Image (cartoon, rainbow, N blue to C red; front, side, top):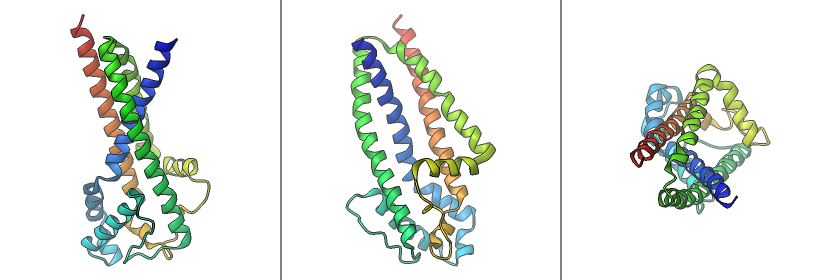
Length: 211
């Protein structure tokens, strides 16, 4: 019973670690946004230079990422109260993600050390195999109907309509097109898929190597 519980919570830590680290990497991977700024011709549509847009995006990321930054003031993009409240809620999700990532990384380290010490690497093969299915399913949904996924995501994590930005009061939304978030979803779940595949083939190789 104790061993079963250890594996159960160990696997939860492992998959939470992969998920939260993929999210953390994606939200801080500014080259993706820099690419989209050019790709979607955002400077031309807003009348700002790419450098100005990137500077404001950097300010936004600083606010979302750092607990000690308590106010969001983007010099070139005014924000309404609803807009600021939504970013505050997003900030809480960011910090929650970092907290879970930290705890699950520790749990994963301890679990993998236990698995290695007890020579039970083979027990990870099936979970990684099943784990490769979930990111693939999400990527298919993204390809078929990202709008529905985007709305479902906001309805799940936010219990208000503050995320429905009005461009006239929160022009920052014009610099953050929905397609950018689609690219973020694709990157995050591609990273998860890659991690699952690496985990599967690595544990399979190690398990058969010891036999």
